[in-house]
Amino acid sequence: MDDIKTAPVASEPAEMGDTEKVQSLAVYDDVGRALYEQAQTYDVAQLEQDAHKVKRKLDFIVLPMMMITYALGFLDKSTLNYANVYGLQKDLHMTGGQYDWVASAASLGWLISAYPASLILQKFSISRLMGGLLIVWGGLCMLTAATTNYGGIFTLRLLLGGSEAPITPGTLMLTSMMWTSQEAPLRTSMWLAVDGVATIVGALLAWGLGHTASDVIPSWKFVFLVVGAITVAWAGVILVFLPDGPHKGRIFSEYERAVLVWRVAKDKRGVKSPKLRMYQIWETLIDPKTWLLCLSSAALGILNGGVVNFKSALISGFGFAGQEANLLGMPSGAIQIAGCVLFGMLAGLKNMKGVAIILSCIPGMVGLIGILTISHDPKYKYSLVACTWLQSCIASPIALSWSLPVVNVAGHTKRSCTLGLIFIFFSAGMIGGPHLFIAKEALRYPTAIIGLLSSYGAAMVLQAMYTALCYFQNKARDEKYGRPADGGDRATDDGALRGFEDQTDMENKDFRFSL
Image (cartoon, rainbow, N blue to C red; front, side, top):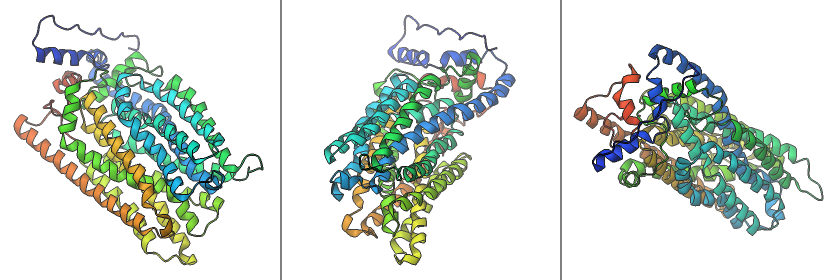
């Protein structure tokens, strides 16, 4: 079967009305349509059998590449956190307020680039763009070692955030293109869970580099140089082996590509259309679910911004020295991995995505309450450190909330636009998060803790509203159109075919939202 050629794409009819013309163009510009038509010529039982084989290939080859790429992005951003322990602020003559802005600079760069990055990813090759940007941000990380003042490091961190902006939406798009809606939450959680691995590796690396200080090169410069060099080296792997989606990738045969497209067709979202459709941008803006996701993303961004940039500072404030503080950050990585996997598995169950997101907020809230209320007597310092470890659970609601536009937004321009808006709000939250930590309130930081607790509460309420809205919209569609067929012979499923017409979730009457 591997030798079967892709079926030719039909041409547009010569005469038709405006509506029909738009629909016809939409049908044939999805990059997966021809492969889906090819899959219809195969035996369904054989497709089902081979679907398990290509899924394993996805999980054991493609997913690890995405995980390592995402981990390096987190590690590059975390270099500031590690370097700060080794005297970065002192050497660059920064005040506490200036460090706050440097900590926010990467998020500011992400904010500026987030929306155009999502639209660019729809238009161009995802794998090539990601590989090229790995080289750029790895180089910027290495250049940070050469900076000598506040202005220099702020500029480099701003550019770093801007160059990293396409990575998260690009990884989300690849996830939506190659895994089904039931599989996507766990895979999203897994590639975000590697931030926990990066935390452990980064802490060990920073600890080791802490012993490399000399009169010429301080330890904090080695942190930027080594992490940046690793990133640039990994770019070669991504450029050569990472697929652009189920329709294109040297690690898949032609038959396997058809199977991959057939697998995801049941979600009625198609694969990818490079054509930008203005009406879908408008639909994004008038959809209330878009703004619930955006506000929730802002709340989660505030939490992430505060946790990422001040975790080491909190641990140091509990009475631990620089290298010891970095080492004590390692268990938080293990907790993050466990939380992402467990809540990701819960979200993979039917109608449990919203519940999983709400429940995943609880561990972080418990930790914040502990930091606010536990005595700072030295005998309780390890209890306080354990509370900071729980803050790493923020990765779970972030990962699962990011999976929602992947599985619940149809229409390729609408999905790209939604992702762009979500990351604008997330970046804005990331910028604001570090500023909740007021220097004179150390070591308890009551303003920051109360602000972060409020953000958790807002994220939970907004998620409950989003889930309820999806439920009632599904119910209304079932009453109006009847329940769409699930499973069965997908090779003849009209709903799956409509997914390749680049219809939005509002247009496709067979589309149902995942709860």
